[in-house]
Each structure stands twice: as structure tokens, then as C-alpha cells.
Length: 271
Image 1 (cartoon, one colour):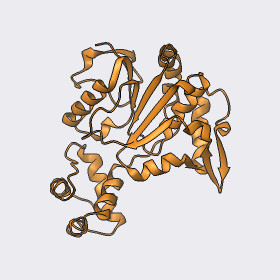
Image 2 (cartoon, one colour):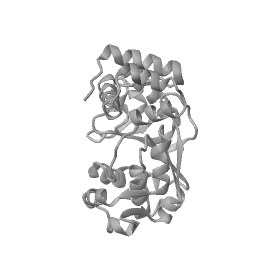
Image 3 (tube, one colour):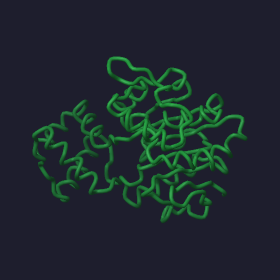
Image 4 (tube, one colour):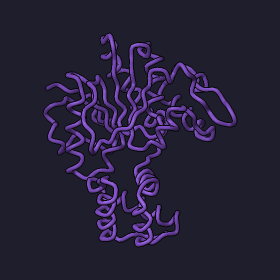
């Protein structure tokens, strides 16, 4: 693998910002260094060649940014999280006539579809709307189609069963050309759209925001900015869900939430 040095990475961040206006400065360096090095190796470039390539602008810059920001996810990742949602969060949300949920950093849509299934099994789907956003148009295009590799469905099915799913995951997709396609009824209440957590603002008020395994890619200053955005996007008594390795600590908003689940980092906005 072609490995960048941290000093070279800082220079690359500056050049990308100058060329495209996209600012990676708030991203955690170890993850960014690993992804940038992987990109160089994949395309057999050194740093100088990469900068010349990016100076072309347009698709060259777009592809580079997409590769450095795409994250892989799983349906029903951390099954105990979905068990806790069903008992602690959805039991509260069922009192609302309309439920808006934001999945921030949705990648290929795995979490959005998982939540849709959970909402359907708890009888809440028809009055719910899920906004699933990501920085990458490439993964959003895939998410809108609701198509997943059959090779991944075995893992997804195991997760679903561990999450105490009520049926079989295969009830929610059909097979076409060796791929799993989520059923249309499951897709009708999901809106996939572009949104940059590091630069865009509030676009709705939500009863629940799921931003799991996203904060780990940002440095402390950037995390605090994103927490502000998430806080302002939540309705009073709405729920904020973070990943297992993430926390509200040092966010500046600790006193504005009560803890619903310490281990799974589920919080409720109280002021």
C-alpha cells in the first residue's frame, strides 16, 4: 500500500479545500489517512500525481471525495440496539400522530430499511417518515433502489433474528438477478437525500435522530458542531441514538439530554 505521511495528508486537505470547497479538516486523521492511502494504492498514484489529477476538477474530485466518505453498514447492526428501540423508544413514539426520523450518514440505506422493518412490525410505519441522508450521491443512488448483495443477506438475516424480528427477513425482499431487492411497500416512506453533516443546516424537526458510527470519523471540534446540528434538529423529548463507541461526553449538550440506555448510547432531549 502507498502510505501517506500525516504532513502530506494536511497538505492534501488544504489542496482539496482550495480545489473543491470541500473541507476534510474536521475529520479524524487516522481514518482519513487510511482511506487516502488506500485510494492512492487503488489508483497507483503518488501524492503529486493525485493533486494533478484533482486539479482537473469535476468528476475527478467528486470520485475522490466519494471514496473517502463512503461507509459500509449492515442491516440490524448491533441487534441489541433495535431491541432497545422497540421497548424504550418506539413505545414512547407510538403516542405521536406522525413520526419523523432522521438517519444521518445512512450509507447504502441499511439502517433506514432496518428501522422501516421495525416500524412496520410495531404498527408505526404508516404514520412514519424516514429521512435518510448521506454525503455520497453514489451510495444514495444504491440506497434508493433498495438493492443489496445476496451474499450480505445471510449476515443481515442473522442480525434480524438476534434483534428479535417477528418474521423472516426474506419477507421484506425478493430476489432478482442474484440480488435482494427490498419490497416497494417498505421503500415508500423513506426519503433519501444529500446532506453534509459538516456544512449543511437543520432541514426539519424530528422525533428521533439516528447518527450511529458517524461521529468517530470527526475530530472533537467537528463533533461539537455536528452535535449542535443534531440537537437543533430534535423535537423536545425526541431521541438521539449514537453508536456504541460514541458518546455525548464533551459535546456541550450533556445537560440537555437524559440517558435512556447507557451501553447503547440512546438519549432523550429534555431541554
